Amino acid sequence: MDNEQIAFNIIMYAGNARAKAYDAVAEAKKGDFNGAYSLIKESGDEIIKAHNIQNSIITREANGDHFEITLLMVHAEDHLMSAISAKDYASEMIELYKRLNEKW
Amino acid sequence: MKILLACVAGMSTSLLVEKMKKEANKRSIKDVVIKAVPVEEIKSVIDDFDVVLLGPQARFKEKMVSKICSEKNKKYCIIPYQIYGLVDGAKALNLALSLIGK
Image (cartoon, rainbow over all chains, first blue to last red; front, side):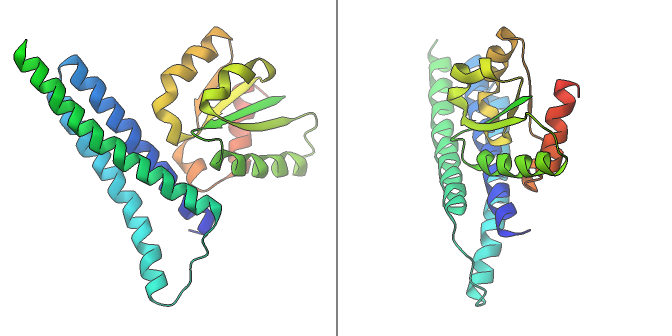
C-alpha cells in the first residue's frame, strides 16, 4: 500500500465503523438489542482494522522509516476519531434504549 | 456527461476525482464534468449531474442519498472497497460510465 492507499483504507474502515454504530442505534430503537450489540461488535472490528493499518505505520516509523504526513492522512485520522466517538456514544445510547424498554 | 462524487467532507473523493479526470483525459473522453462535494450538498447540486458515486465512508447517509436520487430520477451507487481502497480512478470512471449506460 502506498501512502495514499493507507489513508484511503483508514477512511474506509472508519466509515464502516461509523455506519455500523449508527445502524446499531437504529436496531436498539426498534427494540432488537441482540442485533444492536452484534453491530457494535462489528463496528469495533472495523476500528481494529483501521488501527492495524495505523500500527503498521507507527512500527515503520519506529524503525527509522519516516512516514510523510499529508493533509489527507490528517483527514483519515479525523475520520477514525469520529468513528471511535460514534461507536462509544452509540453503545451508551443502546443502554439508554434498553432502560427505556424495560420501563415501558 | 456529469459525474458527482460525494463523501462526508468531499475531501478524499476530490482526490479520486482528479484521478478520474486524468483517466478521462487519457481516453480522450470529451465533455466530462467530475466534481466532489460533501454528502450534505448533493441536494443543492444534483440537478446539474447525471450520476452520483458515494464514498463508502459516507454509507451512513445512503438513505438520504437514495431518496434524493430517486426523486430526481438519477442513478447512484456506493463506490466498492476494491476501487476506493486502491484510489483507482480508471475503475471509478468505468463504474460511472456503466451507471449512465455508456
